[in-house]
Length: 253
Ligand code: NAD
Ligand code: ZN
Image (cartoon, rainbow, N blue to C red):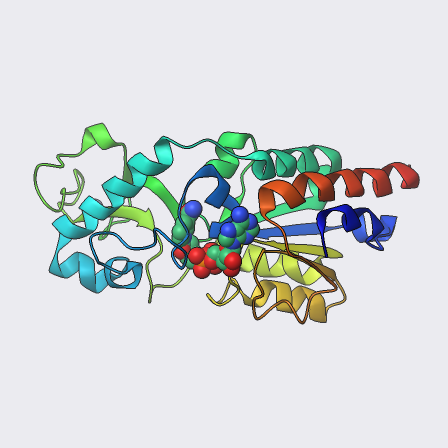
């Protein structure tokens, strides 16, 4: 489906009862944050899968922190794009009927103005003790020692993100599953839909009767399951989709 066809999507006011939006790295691509699987996904010849692991951190905390500092700087220099802004507007239209779940660690949804998205994979700007899980601002830590040591328990401090092979925060994932289970409309945006358990959320929503819309320029394992697959970028498709939803909403009031 192309951009001008979005207005023809067969949405009813009932679809707007409970909307869940799941976003992945593609959501931030047009802000200039590279995806892991796309171009720019390599740093000094290391693959993210080799760096974003507890094993990599234990073996070479300096290397892992250098990579995260590089990514923090890159993200800090970016801005939310029109896709992020469209989702803020969607939240203002729908209020409590709206849930945002993101796999992104860049904090761009919050910077755009979204209220408390469920950040399934954490946030790259948080420093967290690997031992006691307390979090600390940058200026409470000494980054000259590697890894920086926790001011409370002397444990190693790491970025507050979920690494490959680690479990998600149980409260977050339970909330995400519950909201997805109840969804009447589910939007999957800019995710390759291969990283579980996040990838199970749209499948589960669809099985429970939600209308499933995918926004991704490429095909994914979810594409054939979707009721509508919009093969466009998120910064282009989301403003049009939110216009469409506003139109459906205004008919129901
Ligand atoms: P991914 O890199 O595996 O896939 C990105 C998807 O976005 C692809 O399917 C691609 O076709 C699509 N895409 C690319 N440009 C797009 C655009 N402009 N609009 C819409 N879609 C676009 O990302 P993932 O599935 O989110 O999973 C990788 C993991 O890496 C995530 O868990 C995430 O935590 C982490 N990650 C986060 C960021 C970030 O915070 N911005 C960036 C890279 C990786
Ligand atoms: Zn500690």
